Image (cartoon, rainbow, N blue to C red):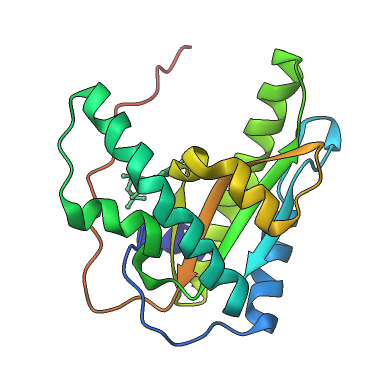
Length: 189
Ligand SMILES: Cc1cc2nc3c(=O)[nH]c(=O)nc-3n(C[C@H](O)[C@H](O)[C@H](O)COP(=O)(O)O)c2cc1C
């Protein structure tokens, strides 16, 4: 797939078949992510690629998070259907969930650089997934159970999970594909 085609075709997929994604394919996606630019070439990301039993256990932990999520949505005044809340425990049945981590730091500037850098790596992974005909969705709501997930995945103390990425073969359910704002730049001569 041509690059601009992949950029346009990429949308968050939230529903997956149970067809597995091979280790070889996941290694290609991780390679694409690892080639992203990063501040001071720090390459702050580490990826925890969960499938099989670990992926199942992850769902168990994530389902505990929906309780906190309900409270959170209440605070924000949003309404969520039980189906939407359920989605966070199953992540659309994605056979692969990747936890993206960066080093912890109290330094606001360094933290910003790490977040920006891992964001680029995540986009590379999403685009590579699109190119390979897979569906993917970045998710941050795992924050509510982040400690438990870090424990399950044995993420070292010095690192934090900043995002999860659900990956798999998409079902026929079309993505929401919201319109993207195109009035984003100010051009200055
Ligand atoms: C940092 C980040 C966090 C996100 N978290 C969630 C999430 O928790 N749940 C969800 O359904 N989608 C999540 N998304 C996907 C966005 O909702 C989606 O990218 C946005 O609505 C634009 O739609 P598109 O990706 O289909 O173009 C997240 C995306 C990003 C970049």
